[in-house]
Length: 164
Image (tube, rainbow, N blue to C red; front, side, top):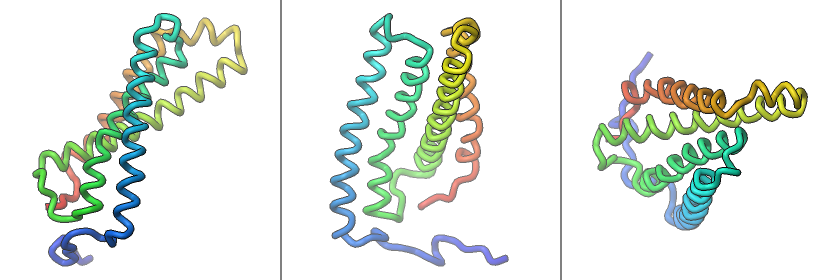
């Protein structure tokens, strides 16, 4: 099997025309503003109100942290759209960016899955779920979800295709 490198298929600048990049950038900036604002407000409201610290809201708060981090990675995605190569931020930032992005994406998926299971239990077994699904257990599940997501994304720290 043949090995390919970036030198074999080197792109200067962007892969897309400017007429496409400008509307995409404007939309991404709006998504960034709404996403960062909304997730920050979600986190603050849930953390500062004792009544809001339900098991469901614990999942939502943790997922909001994950989504907020993904939104904070959006400027790097926009940079890659405008200037595909070379990556000017260095190898460490490239690896860390991919690690964080993949870890948080996995964490979001795992949170949605856990939240779905919790809601299923609450609907199917309303009395039993109040005993089984406690805040302490949900906190442990959230820690386990984050741990699994970040460990599984660890491959991106070791082996990621660099845009240098």
